[in-house]
Length: 319
Image (spheres, rainbow, N blue to C red):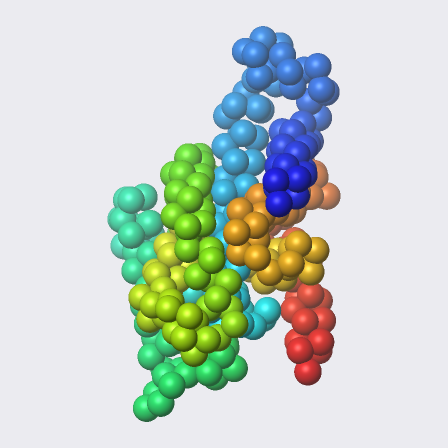
């Protein structure tokens, strides 16, 4: 367990250093070390501290948030196809955030609106899936897909009535973009606190993954634990959407791949998701910045190119 997390930590550090060095202007290793110490050229210091460091840390936090949220949803549904993007949580958070941006609210209220939208999406999905009986994972997943499509229609309507001067930024944000992220510490803190909060519950999550009836028979308070997962996944998703827009498929790819390699013990999967998700999005953002430099791609485009074939593979395998 410790060895695996240490390896992921080293990989995350290497990805962050690569992201800090790469770009339209490459910073050599010696120049990077000098800039970290406050020496070197003013160009290197500006690139490091004002541009690349906030963006890289924001990408790491966003990837970790989405991966942990996806792992929690997959535990709850016992389905590797579940993630905040597919279940509509990202769409609800995006609608809340765009509504706050459209009305000119401050950054803090944008975050609160995104969380409210994610919570509304959660209640809507689980309420519709429950109906007059108990919900099943397959029913919940299908309901989430339909609700996600509904959020997409609402987003299209909002974009249609948005003033033209606000439209380009909102469109780029919807595709997933961390280029305007300047405050990486709040999402990093939320990611760290969420992992610390959920780790003591990892044993109960291992039991819940076997099914609610087995968990209840073994003394787990199933309903409070499920609602804890709902709220925490909504908080993580809302924070990620507020930081980088709608970035899809990270919560789908990372937890499933880690389970193939590390097994299904949540005591290691959840912190591993935080590290691996952050590493994946940092590398994807680095690729988005450099593949057609000096022009930049939205990072959501890169994750979608990775996520769509992975989703189709998992869907075919689940048959």
